[in-house]
Length: 289
Image (cartoon, rainbow, N blue to C red; front, side):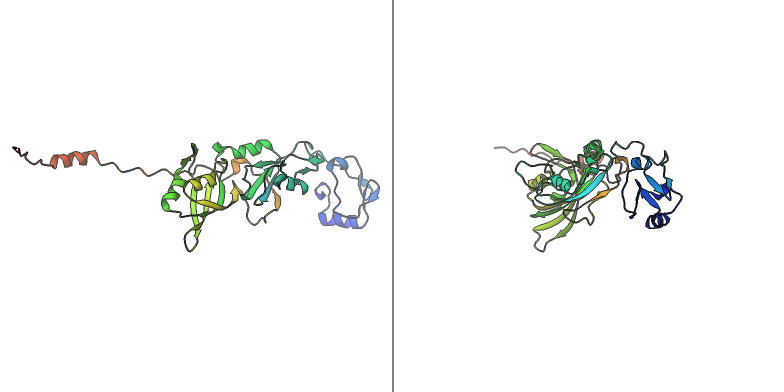
């Protein structure tokens, strides 16, 4: 860290290549050598014969506590999210472990990863994982109304009425699903396959598949493309990347989504009375038998 010295990064590299930097009495030959600040504080680093000391401000306030870290993962289709499956099916968290995702340099161990939200086995796309269980729970809670957006390929006839039912909310199998934001993307030539973009803030099990099936539509592909302000973008399938953690309060993609049903117009009472007064009854005719 050249910020702890009175030299620039380029000058520091020149010192290293000139043999002016030693670590534990051995010359440092590469600027890519990794050391901990706590190790530098022990006086093992020398520059041109002088011991480099770490100032109080440069030392981590607490090297053990884990700062909240977040990784974005492109989950594969037919992959479970869980860390271990007794049936030995492929799992996303196990794949991340093999790639050393979650390794803490400070603690020198793997941290436990918690997915933010879940995806069923056949759903693909974005899952954010974190080492902070509290952050994960806060991001999942429905009352925080964090938006989740999916691309849905639906087979069947998608009518304006069905779209409205999704927007207003509906009950399926005794479970109430809040209204969602629904935008039609593309429709095939025959009109039997449609790509729809759906945004919701609930995370109920198989929610999108259940409500579409209830409306006579089969979900043939389901891809999550965003969760709050975390986006899948161009992250390739099966890949992951660490990103800065966005505090819950800073997420902009949140809030209510349900649309209110338009109220049926009731006849105006004054007009009804006026019409009744204008109405003149016909005289009654008695018929003898």
